[in-house]
Length: 289
Image (cartoon, rainbow, N blue to C red; front, side, top):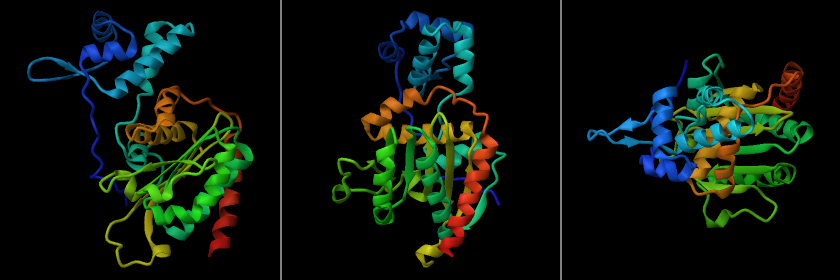
C-alpha cells in the first residue's frame, strides 16, 4: 500500500524580481526575456500582478549560468536545468515517490532497516570516493548509537550531515558529521534515511514511519521503505536533504544545493553495484535477526 506524507508542505520563500536579479547577477529585463522566450523562470503571481520567485529559482538560474559559461547554448542549458529542477518537498520519501513512482515501497521493521542502513554505509566507505552523505535519524536518542559509525563515515566523506531533534547536548565533534536540528513539525522527523551520492557510487534508503505505533517496541516499529542505487533517484534524495539543511542555515549544505543541481553522472557498473549492495544487505540483515 502506497503511503504519502500529507503533512509535508513546501516551505516557500517569496523573492521579488529585484531580489532574484541581485542574487543571480541577471537584470530584471533579462529575467523577463527568459520568461517570455524560454518559459523559465515561472513566477507565482500575486493578485496585484507582481512576480514572486523562490530559492529554487535562484539555484536553477545559477546552474544555467554555469552550464552557459561552460559552452552550452542558453536554450539547451535552460531545458536541461528545468528537467532537473530542485525538490518540491522537504520530505525525502515523498519526493522520491513523486519523482520515481516505479520504486517499490515495502513495509519493513526497524531491525531490517538497520541492516540495510549498515550495508549502504559500509558499501559507501568501501567503494565511494569522497561521497556526500546524509543520514536522517528522527530523534537524538536514535542517532546516539550510530554516532561512532557516522564519525568514521565523516572521515572518508567530502561532507556528512545528519538530521534529528538534536540539541546542544549532541554537538558534533571536530571529526564528526555536521548536525542539523529538526523541529517537531519537520517531515524528516517521521523519516529514516541514508543517502550516499558520489561520482563512482550511489545508494539510498528512505523510509517513512507508519503512524499509530506509540506502544510498539522500538525494534519492532514498521516503516514504508524504498532503496535504490539509481543515480537520478539518489541525486533527488540528496537535493532534498541539502535543501532542508540549507534552510536550517547549514553553510555546507548551502553550497551543496548549488552543486547538486547538476545532473548525476551515469555509471557503467550500476548492475554490479546493485548486486554487491544486495549481497551485503542480506548478510547484515541475517546477522541482526
